[in-house]
Length: 122
Image 1: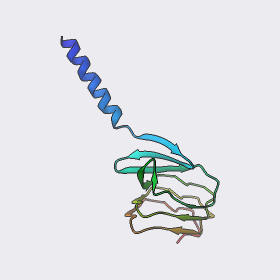
Image 2: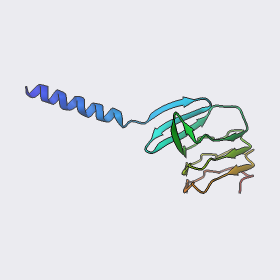
Image 3: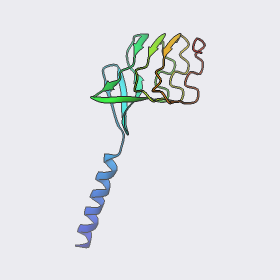
Image 4: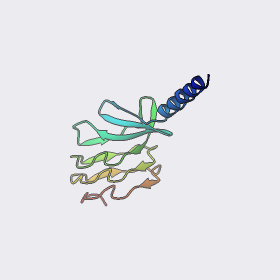
């Protein structure tokens, strides 16, 4: 009986632990991770140089641009939709061709070096 109780407790702990792991996925041109409150963009898989970031993916709001998401990409123009709250560390680092970026007032945090080595972004 004691072993059965311990087994049930372990199964419960394992189930709870797995349910809080981030879910990583891709949809169209976007790699993303499910986080608390919505999704974090982790990478752009497309070839376009002028893009508008999605405001939703998989029927969930996109709320963050992840660390290094667009690092060293060929982007020239980016429009960030209202609803994005965070631009992660080095998100656009090394995007030397990036000349125009539209940042909405919903962005409350721009992490360190988000635009490092982006000579055309001021």
